[in-house]
Amino acid sequence: MIFTEDYTENAGSLSFDILACQHTEDREACWQNLTQELMHELTVHQNKLRQAIAQRHQVEAERKQLAEKLEESEAKNHALIEASAAQAQQFGQALKQLRQNQAQIIQTEKMASLGQLVAGVAHEINNPVNFIYGNLPHAADYVQDLMHLLQLYQQHYPHPAPAIEAVATAIDLDFLIEDLPKLLMSMRVGAARIQKIVLSLRNFSRLDEAEMKEVDIHEGIESTLMILQNRLKTRSNHSEISVLKDYGKLPFVECYVGQLNQVLMNVLVNAIDALDERDQERSLDQQIQYPSTIKITTAVLPDNQIAIRIADNGLGIPEQIQQRVFDPFFTTKPVGKGTGMGMSISYQIVAAKHKGQLYCHSIPGQGAEFVIQIPIQQQP
Ligand SMILES: Nc1ncnc2c1ncn2[C@@H]1O[C@H](COP(=O)(O)OP(=O)(O)OP(=O)(O)O)[C@@H](O)[C@H]1O
Ligand SMILES: [Mg+2]
Image (cartoon, rainbow, N blue to C red):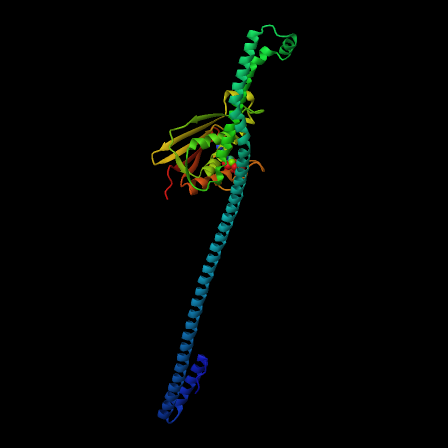
């Protein structure tokens, strides 16, 4: 008897063999043979079973190995995806930083060359103005002497020759004598003003001063205001912007003066822009009734810092953009008017260069206030 794979067939053949043994004479031997055959078949079957189990174990082990490898490569894939996402983010950030740096370099260069130009012009004007201003008192003295002499002549020769009389009438001598000192005085005021402007220009253009200096902050504010005078005074459709000053008693402050002037300039120009923008929608009457003002306050703070507050009563800054004012390239001004770099550069100068703070608060519709806070002394 042979066991085949088919159990029913084997079962049929087994019952047949059993039947055969029951009818044979030598039943004992038949049973023995049958038992031996069965044992043999059982052993063969057992071996096959073991083999199958071993194969199954191997397949299982291989499957497990494959699953582990799959898991491993999935983890690697995941890590790779994460790494490339992080790298992309890094690239993005580096690009942003690069653009920011580039814009900053351009702006700094622009300011530096403007500073050089201003310094050059101021230097050129300085000498001739000094001649005029320096000589005006002497001219006034000479004129006074000549007048005195003329008076003496008039006293001693009350009836001059007709030719002299004719010229005296032609030049309106009485008016000339009265007006000349006034004229000299106004020339002196004018020259003094030019001198002040030159001084402001020189102060403002101290961009080349690389080291920190102890300076009078109010001088910087005054120079910047002087340069902006043209934008503050009455123009067509704009009435004058009044500047209110509430200066505290400040000590000398250690800072990069040229850069700090740049910050003052940026903040003040923004305030003037905001006021001008509002005035475009206001009649001259309204402007006179509610004048545009910029208030500048300075004070010493308890933590060895000073604060400069510049507040305008312009349009203010809408709440949703207050956070973005210091972002590079953020501007609400028309193309070609604003680059959006003024506040971002000012922030860098105050925060990074002077370890200070620059912030703003604003109630939309009522105005904006920018506060510059810097330490009186810089830590080494
Ligand atoms: N005093 C202010 N009142 C109202 N809005 C202001 C004021 N100061 C700044 N802003 C807002 O902040 C924005 C950013 O100012 P920032 O000085 O950085 O750029 P900008 O003035 O637009 O251009 P620029 O680079 O020429 O200065 C302005 O466009 C404006 O919307
Ligand atoms: Mg600006």
